[in-house]
Every structure is written in C-alpha cells, then in structure tokens.
Length: 96
Image: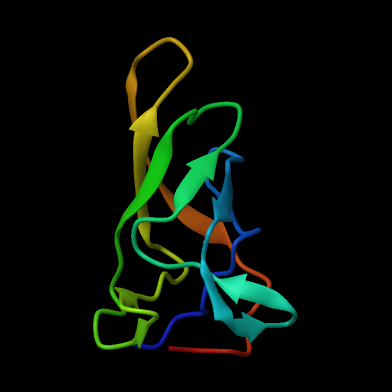
C-alpha cells in the first residue's frame, strides 16, 4: 500500500525531526526527500538515524526513500536506546 513520502523536516512519534542530508536533488514541496541513513535529532532521540523503510524499490541518490512509518533508531539523552517511526508527514498527496 502506498504511503506518503518523507522530507527532512518530518517528525517522529517522539517529536524528533529528520534533519538530513536527504536527497537534495529530489524536492517535494520545496524540501529534500528523506532517505535511509539520514540523521534524526530532537529532545528524545539525540543521535537517531532512519534505519528501515518500506519503499525499497524507490532509490534517490543511491539510497532508498523514507516514507511515513519508516523506523528511526537512536539513543536518548540518558543513553537509553530509542526506536520510533516517522509519523508527521505533510506530503499526504505524494505517495510512494
């Protein structure tokens, strides 16, 4: 089932933000597309990374595209492992 594509300012369920670098050649609503391996930072996930996506057949700049529901893993400020998903996506009409 197609899901909305993620960009570098999309948020996770824990209010962390995908910060990039993204696929800068592929813009959606003026923002670079988020890809597997992009950094995620915020109050609950200090050194997060997008680690899993369901859009493995869509490749931008050599990396699979991230979409709503892509898994983010990282570490909290206290050193506790964190796993969350990209949940807030403003590209609801751009499906992959």
